[in-house]
Length: 115
Image (cartoon, helix red, strand yellow):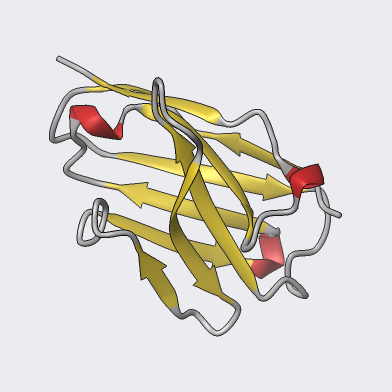
């Protein structure tokens, strides 16, 4: 299984934007579906965005229209462009396959939305 390293998190004001990256230790071109997950304070980790190798995407209602998932198989990297951020987007963000491979979870990257 690939190992995944998320980056790009930080502190941002409400309404701001961030771009997260997820670098894989190996090729993701053979992995049909990659996804982003997040764990908000006091909540369980949950899925909110996925992308297939053909470029089809699916989003949870909570992020639809604000977040965009993309992938670059040549760079073995998955991206998450986040716009119009809200305080409720505060969480640790992770990428993984969909469904997730329990041995591929990385440490995640913290996103804090606060004024």
